Length: 384
Image (cartoon, rainbow, N blue to C red; front, side):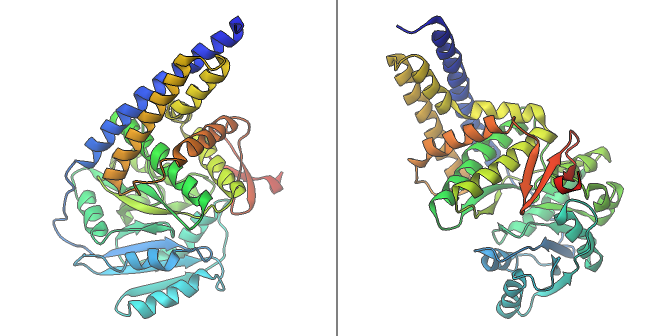
């Protein structure tokens, strides 16, 4: 027999699992509906500058950069790369890109001036004056895209009332075990969470994997100077564009996002930074992620109930619901359709990160430690 406290904890955990199962099944349906929407095509193909801040030699950097040179887009395209250090190893990939695509218009800016605590925004502030065109597409260095990416982004941006286009993304793991766990977190927790939040009117996302807007829209939103101390500068830019009265839209396709975290320590550090960022900018949305962990709650129910049969059955249903969500995400977003055995590991790790995210507001980003205030702004801990 278990005591009344353990019985109560078992029931609370079971309730969490039931809500999580319902959420997983709902999210699976909403993911299918989201990606079934038509994607608008551009009325014309205006000139575009694609701005990519670079930092370091990433494993798939050249392949990801090359995908932006293989666009089925009729208008002129400038590829604008920014680095803080003229000796940055990422420039080797840019040199190889020029050899691979000699017809591409490639511009490089090397400028290490720091404008605030967000080094990526400093890079963009230093790089943007070299942009030749009015239509700007910002995309992180670790992003890979399909050949119709630019056409679909521009088509969405040309719709009435749209001021910015951003894109959902799926995790593309570098070689290794831990990178696959990282991709799982992106694909089966983050992505369906965003789609569900959008459907329920609870999410107002903007992702650095793609931010497309006109130069005038960026100016009216305050320019990058406004965001030079924000940890989640992409989210802050999206909110600033909405303040101008324009819409931020997400077309029904995904880009790929490299997952390079090749050790447990790197994976936990990355996931904690991401989770604490969401907690800082969207506390209610962050708390809602608790329902993306039905298997963890079911296992807690098993523990607190002393291994009761109903708890085993609940765990089996939770596992089945998570598999159903994975199958639908893989079908719609181009996942691997394998590694089902990794789901329990990634789910339990994600639950642990979620709990740990409440312990502190400090994050580690590119080797630097920061604390984050309620507005999402960073202060370097070494400045204290």
